[in-house]
Image (cartoon, rainbow, N blue to C red):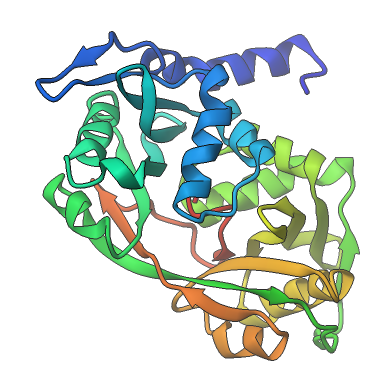
Length: 309
């Protein structure tokens, strides 16, 4: 992915916090559960865990997440029975997700121990996550507080009427020259830098830009994920801009299974259902530490994924 020594330096610097997390010593417990670092060789088994709890992730989705983060697994008698991952973003923030315990081993505080192990290496960071209804109590016991909700919408996408934009505004495909500006827009909307992630997403996605007289004011991405396609992130100055971006990508995906995870206060839920994307879940957004502060006038309307934020 890197094309110059200077870019290599940026990416290696961004990955240094990960290297502190991925090699904890195996930690045994009185019930035979051993915690150790998640390895790339574990991803096939982690995929099996996600399938056991009916999550849609493909092996490629696990591999994508692993490239930017680190994790911990729980083993019992050599069998992997739980996992959890975290992703550091810049010097001050991180997200946490893909916390899964084998259904036959639930109720033994394995999830609590996995998350606790990750947090031990994230003490100096604000940590964000999206909690299922079943997991919310666990995270509250670990010091997380609710900051909002996400609305997961999915279904067979329908062709959407184009959203009218004001004179001087238009949609266009992204090109290589846009990369730096789109990365800056994502940083502004999230309140934390995610350059390496965004560069990989740009390479893997169809990206459309909201342009105002030659200035990038927003963007949205469409790529493979789970059962079909996912739209996200979506960054825009207002809901009309977000609708224009999403409608364009939904039109490209008509007849295909599409998912999008939106902020609960985005004002898009009813409109998305008119496109065939029905609400199926509502995870709780939580944080431990200060909430990231976005730049005024730049809004995140849809996530990359619930794990990555």
